[in-house]
Amino acid sequence: MFNRFSLNLHGRLYVADRPQVMGILNITPDSFYSGSRTMRDREIAARIISMVEEGADMIDIGAYSSRPGAADVPLEEEIDRLRLGMRLLRDIAPEIPVSVDTFRAGVARVAVEELGADIVNDISGGDLDPEMWSAVAALGVPYILMHMRGTPSTMQQFVDYGDVTADVINDLSRKLRGLRLSGVADVIVDPGFGFSKTIDQNFEMMRNLRAFTLALDAPLLVGISRKSMIYKTFDTDPAETLNGTTVLNTIAISRGASILRVHDVKQCVEAVRLSLLSSN
Image 1: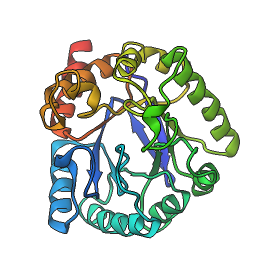
Image 2: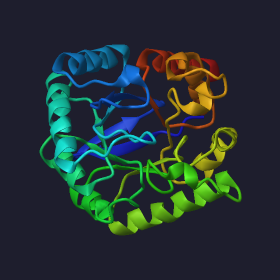
Image 3: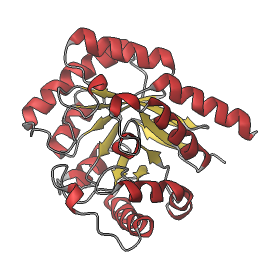
């Protein structure tokens, strides 16, 4: 059963009465899935138009690749990339909720105050910038709290868990309390599939996904789109993972996912609709 949730987006109440599809907009030259990379105006605009026409409820824009081994991006370059993407995004889809994928408080401030982003999506859960939580509280926007250990370049060195589901829930629960004490009202939690987890641990979390919805008083975001837990299972590559992604997204819907972050909007929208029709 889907847990209805609401978000305060700059004073506008956004109510979700079904699982939300969040399309990925990468303004990067080096994201792990080459099909999602956009850097030129025409490519970015085409990607935005496609996602909107296919039924995306939200768009997540990022300008810093978090894949292992990706090059560091200076803060000003990250902001410049976001300026380009957000300008096109707001011209094409002025009303769609937009989250900015960044772990830097300075980038989050510019994205929200100057560029019109509605939500901050932080892969580090505040660990990579101690000013992030206070910045989000001052900005008054929802925050996506993801679980990760280390940094994107070191995260796979930190996969030693007693019980991956319990340990991740405990870490998210502790940070969730800290965020609320810091004044962040709306928090979305993300277990961090593919971030400081082995393939087996990713599937263990997927099997236990319902535990996250029961233990954490927050909407649950699942981001497994075209990730290594799929392509390494079948010894392929990200380009060959659409079917696997759709299967896992359908499972996530059945286990309480509130938001699905995806590269392929049309297929996820269809999975949501068919899942709802089948459950009623």
